[in-house]
Amino acid sequence: MDFALTDEQRMLEETLTRLVADQVSPEQRRALLEAPSHAASPLWRTFAELGLLHMPFSEDVGGLGGDGTDLMIIMQALGRGLVPEAYLFGLVMPGQLLALCGSPAQQARWLAPLLEGEHQLALAWQEHAARYDAFDISTHARQHNGQWLLNGRKDVVMNLANAAATLVTAQLPNGQLGVFIVPADAQGVSQRTYCTMDDQPAGDLMLDDVALPLEHCLSEDAGEALAEVLALGRAALCADAIGAMETACDQTLAYLKERKQFGLPLATFQALQHRMVDMHLHLEQSRSMAILAATSLSLPAQERDAKLAAAKAYCGESARFIAEQAIQLHGGMGMTEECYVAHYAKHLVMFDHYLGDSDFHLETLSEQLDAA
Image (cartoon, rainbow, N blue to C red; front, side, top):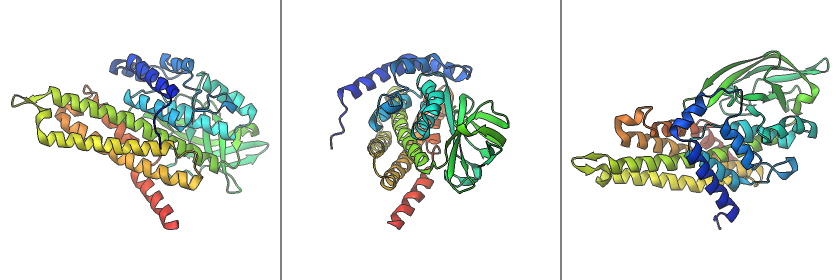
């Protein structure tokens, strides 16, 4: 099978590489993290101008019709630069759910401004007691006096503080899974926001008799659509991790070539050379799994989910291994904020926990193999 990029994809990769290098230096990244969350950053507006916000969506909803490989190219570039913008959690995942389930009116109200960079959204699917199971949830919704009433709590909602509205999953009285558009200023909504270990904005969302108009129900049977969106998110995360692993390996090798001990560069010591080889082996094997994930999105659901579970599990283990090796090979300075590889290490450790950790996906894969 030919995995070579097309001319257009190579151009996309080169453009993103230059953009990230120019606008996301360590100092610029810190400024982006510290900027107020209520307005789009200059970098996000640049994404909109370049069409990157339209890229992952089909032409039917105003996108550019990009496929899994296009999204992989984008996410790898963002991962290499540790770009703090919520491209996946604030755009791709909630936007794709709107594209799959939303009516034309809902898409015009929420999806079109999203693609133009006018606002961001969030997707609330995770609950504390359900671990990573998106369908074992206690948040529930029912109709009352011509409205929907939502009650429950969602945990670790990525990009919650920056979202104009949050897409919330809830169990309906008939047992189906519903998805609702909950504006940030809706009555009965409260938030507890924080940042994850790798500086990503997140929060817990509490819903206390939140009354929504009927047209704020995105779908009353969203199980298959949600599974598709989570699959897309896992494939994108694998690509993001590949970019971060690449840079962590490059920075570690550069440090070993520069740092000297006993009058010789550390890179000349055979034991450390072996550890660098192990890091690159994990990187290249993970790259193959990320390609598998990106090219499996159009497969039937069961086959798609099995391949994505395998890819996410392997990439999660590799990400943790590379993070640990990068820190150890840098020595004590690898634990400091001033050493930039520490930020990549934190990002790689947290990658394993987003959208299901390695243990969860290995268990999922084992269950599918037993049932086969």
